[in-house]
Image 1: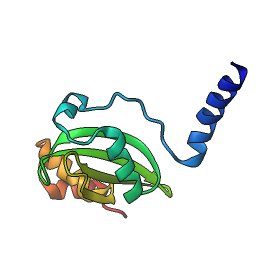
Image 2: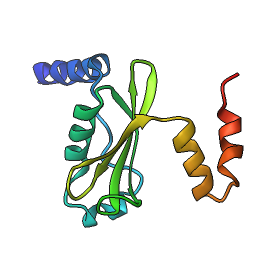
Image 3: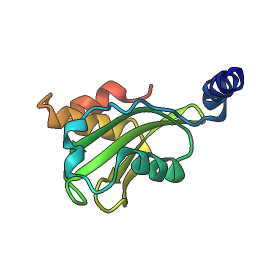
Length: 126
């Protein structure tokens, strides 16, 4: 019993140090999972292969492109956050880019926050 506890503790300590994420099984959009051919564990593996790092946020969402259902992961890699989109049915990478000006402008438009240029001005470097 003592060996099992030591092994579990070692894994819990080592996981953050290796950059691998041991994420909870509950995630945003989990109710859509029954419509996906891939489970989130497989999608995580695909995303981390495309962009090694640490997953900081994950969700399953309906979005244009591919099959219309995608897993979206924010992955911290070398101090920068990237968004990686994995098609929930084919496993194809739909997005693998810097989480920044372009994606925030797109979110602003989707949410009806106004013009794209307004969103970009907020993030424009000095």
